Length: 197
Image (cartoon, rainbow, N blue to C red):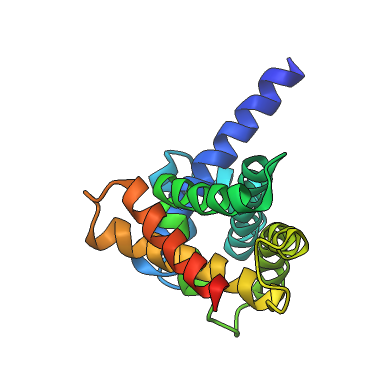
């Protein structure tokens, strides 16, 4: 019985996450109300407050959930691969993730540049965790000689994360019919050229 209750609660939380992401991506955080989230998720307003004490807490948890999924997908993508293949796998994992969670990616892209939000510190830490997976791969590439020895690992890793995010959102908004393989190859071409300079 506890497993069933736990599963139902997780299902409800997931519906709330999806509803909140969609609404905040559509109309912004300030204009999204708890009533809106409850209606979109198909639950009572009290259910939102039962699961999250406020809209701000819901949003912070939403960031943890979304970026946590991306970080886990990065880790799974690079597991056991040599650096060159791991970089390609990271690019593909980010594109796949953003294709599945486009509204979250748009939300993340807009929130990364705002510095006046209560959750900015949380976002910075979570973004750092995702970028660290990329940095581990870039460091391995430098160590193996696949990448230049003087490469600034932190900047290169942040750039790969950010460029992947922007390119993926641009692709889905302006060129949704373009095959993911084309986008991946174009992105990898940029990465390779930068790494050779």
